[in-house]
Length: 258
Image (tube, rainbow, N blue to C red):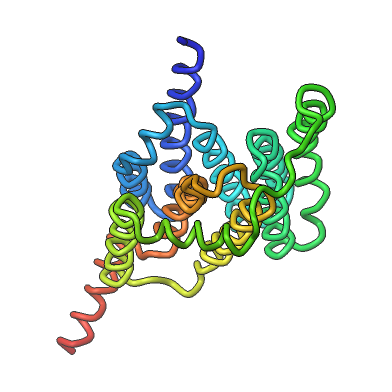
């Protein structure tokens, strides 16, 4: 029992610090503290890490890959994509959906840095993919077929949008973040995070449709679990930092006085 608890604690702590470090590097320290508070304040998400669901490590790997792609794009260093490939490979090994997410991440990397991103990304993913292949060929050679009609599955996913859990844990925070973005203002130069998030969301939906072992499962909640850190990352990359807002406000006041 101790080992799984320690592993869960490592993932929770590592994800929080990685969120802080990535936002500090790409934006400002103040913005990093806000992102850290947001991820630690997501009780439903951190709670899933405490109960040792595999969705939490998958979410951590997806965020790590996305942050590495953002850093590689900012610095124009394709070799940093080996970290994104490493995280994507481990995501593929962690859960079935990880394979779909890895393909989406590779597409985002190529979109941002071109064909030169293929080699470092694939090189980084070799370790995780090798473990996945070994696992599938030895311990779990059989792959379940599609368990439900895609239309019924989509209806089941859509029905989760009206549950109290989804409205309370997902819709309300997103409304708060929408208000935060409106008040703080945004930058057109940092919208790439939303495109990457949309690609990951499509990949998650495709994974659920291709193979889901229980349409009664909260498939919509699972996708949000996977993408919650990436969504917070996109919010705090896109929004202006408090010091930027103060600087902009000061310039407006000076201009109005003149």
